[in-house]
Length: 331
Image (cartoon, helix red, strand yellow):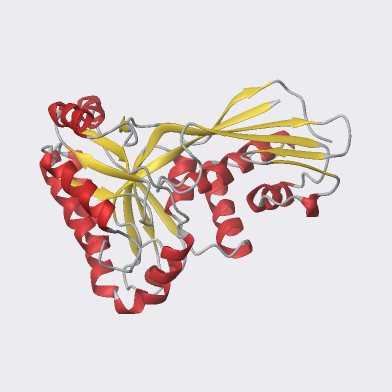
């Protein structure tokens, strides 16, 4: 049996500029500053004695051929790695794997590729994992998403990820002292909205309207570099202000990113003393990322009910890794 562990991510600034509709048209491309979180997707893979394929996630599939597998990410990751039969695959998530704005679906793809490529004796490095996950999700399955989630999940750590007009990707790790990392855990909080949603409809609308929103998206791109500097020097009040400025731009891009309930929750977060907050991911639900000292987190716990889970932002430094390998191989 093999088990891969792959982090989800929190994106500080620049989200939306990782869509090809933007970075192919912008002279500078796109950029996102994000952080892999110590909240994980686990993929277990085990060869079967028979030829069937069993896939267990929120549903369970037991099929006789690869083309019968309904889970698109599983099917295409198997095709990519040459695993065609006789395997059992299970996915387990620390956080719901869809609709949370944390890049969970791409973490699943990266984790699948990591486990399956290792199973067949051809393990991929982090950049290969990310590039192949992008190919499967965007090119093969036609999902209207960008490239930031795949690279954040595969590489781990805190990075400014660049998306160049020619389609290439650059990764520039942030330089963070141990004291800064500890302060990030203490001062940045994720607040669950109590709502999950599919990102596809929002991202499809954003893709269609990109040409009309180039100015706003260029601002979001610049904020990715501004927030990088503020994080590295420990100016977290400035980071909070940039989260807030990013949200005020993002919420106007297309309909469906926000709504009355989300706006009300945002205002309650600020009323607890947060210096800024933005909704992660495409919008419509998931998690807010907010900045505020430890007293703000305690105020949030008192203000919000149990539906609004509160999580500290804890950095993952490893990216997608194999955490168990008993040596059994497929084939």
